[in-house]
Structures are given as C-alpha cells and as structure tokens.
Image (tube, rainbow, N blue to C red; front, side):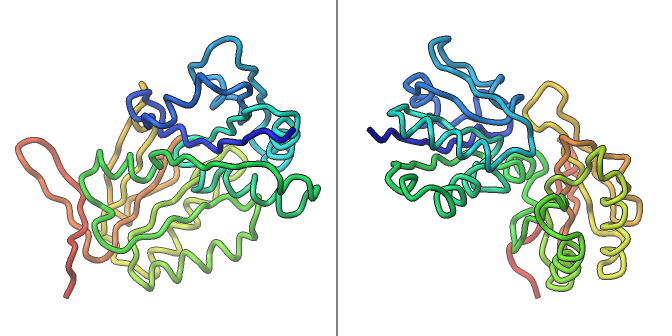
Amino acid sequence: MSGHIYIIGLGPGDQNLLTIEVATLLPNLTDLVGYGPYVQRVQVPDTIRKHSSDNREELDRARHALLLAQQGHRVGVVSSGDAGVFAMASAVFEAIDHGDPSFKETEVTVLPGISAMFAAASRLGAPLGHDFCAISLSDNLKPWEVILKRLRLAAQADFVIALYNAVSKARPWQLDTAFELLREELPLDIPVAFCQAISRENEHIEITNLKDAKASMGNMQTLVLIGSRYSQLLTTQQKTWFYTPRSIK
C-alpha cells in the first residue's frame, strides 16, 4: 500500500505566517520528518510520530520519508520557509528520481510556505520590487568557485541579491569574501540589509551599505539582502524603508 508525502513549507517561524492549507493538513498526518529544530517547532497532536535528523542529511531524510509512505503513512516532510527554496522539495524528488523504482508510485504534494526572503522583504519595505535572485553561500552541495561566479554575474546583471546560508560557524570567512567580490562590481553606497530570525522572538534587522557590510553583522539565522544600483532608502516619519523601484531608466 502506497501512502502520501506532503512536502511542507513552515514559513519563517511565526505560527501566524503558516498557510491555512498547511495548518489544516498537519493534524491529519501520521509522521513528521525533517531537520530537528524545524520538526520540534511544529505544533501537532502527540499521536503524530516525529522523525528528526541532522541538517546535512537531506537525502537520507527524503528516503526515510519515502519508505514510511510505502508503508501507507501520511508523511509530512517539513522545511523552514518555502520547501522549494534551498530545502527539502528538491531532495525528495532527487531521492525519487535516483532511488528505488517503487518510489515513483508514491503520491507527492508540495505545499508552499513564505520564504525567508519574502518575510524579510516585507519588514524592509520592497527591496524585491524589481528583478532579483537568490543565491546560497553554502558550498556543501556546490563548489565555492561556482558561487563566486554566480555572485559576480548577478552583480553585473544588477539583480537585487538575496543571500541564503550567508554565515556559518564552519564557513566564517565566506560572506566577507562575497562582499569583497561584490565591491568590485557594485557602487559602495547600495543598501545591504541583515535580516535575522524574521517573525521570531529574536528578530533583528540592520541596514547598512556595501562599503560597511561585514560578516560579523550576521549569524546562522540571517538572510542578507543586497540592493541593486537602483535600490533606495526612504526615511519617513515611521521608519527607514528599503525599496527598489519597479521601473528603471
């Protein structure tokens, strides 16, 4: 009997930012699979079995979920933010594509969540108002040389850049190296925002410019948004907003 896998985006953290679709589904699952801290933050009945694993075990986690589904279970595979953005959706499909042929019989549904870059953008104003891209600085799954190439080309194309996995204890030097590269391609006064733990209790936002940006401003919970040549800071009576105009000349 083949079960069902639901690949779930949990949003940035606040339960109010969980989609109604996901909130309705969660109590009806039999199993919950994911990175430990994400699994533990999900509020579900005690009857639902939780399967936690380490952050670098995505493919093993996906295979485990598929095996549970093959036993007839309704399995939720959870990710922070949106499961399709540097998260578990791709891992599940990779496991199906390259795994046991029987995995292809499993019914799969992908449920979207609010990505970190969209949650951060809403706090800042409208930094993603024109063309933008998202790049992960983690070199666990791709060479560092590829990351540097993509950063340089994104800067030359004048995209607003959202950096995921920007700071890590294992990679403390990478973000400063990325800033050095971007300073070769972009004006030093463009805005840069460090957005930590958006929607959670320890939320913190710091806006600076490319000249003064440094890795010590962020941590493992920080998304970094780097403006384009057209991005602006707008100070109102309420606060300073970071936005990118929809039209350019």
